[in-house]
Length: 247
Image (cartoon, rainbow, N blue to C red):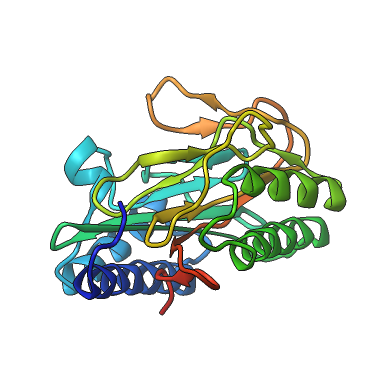
């Protein structure tokens, strides 16, 4: 969507804060031996307490309030009976709606004992997201996003997951524009003031594509590599973007 009023901005900031609070609380309450279903229920209760709902659950019948992906799962993991184990790399993705406005965010973290290689992967992916966001404003070419993600991945010694994209958001879960995580010289689109998009790099230690699993939701790496994802919903301005998914 493109914001057209202060009401739009305020509503996006409200649902963005709720999404950020939900992820923050889920991360803090994650425990070894807890099932991903139990962790998801915590997220669902937080959303409900703020009069928000899971957008994928209500519009796509996703079987959970949040996506919880572990280790070689990288996105759209279904909450269930799987127990969180030592050293697991966990990704929580929350996309929620309130009063017709949607915000989307994701966060990767590991359970103890911590591995330096995973810590570095997570830090570099997060830094990539923030570096991209800080460079965007009205008039910047959309393909600069993919160029920067690709360059930062290579600088860190990582691969880009090519079939997972950033995207428009605000009134629906996925809106135009779809934004490739690699450079496309033929993409002449530019960012315009008021545009609401996500920035969500997926960086991998090996694979460049994810594969959908038989459950129809979970996206998994086809090899033994690991990947991290971080995501914010932002509003493009004439200067630095406004990040709405912050608490």
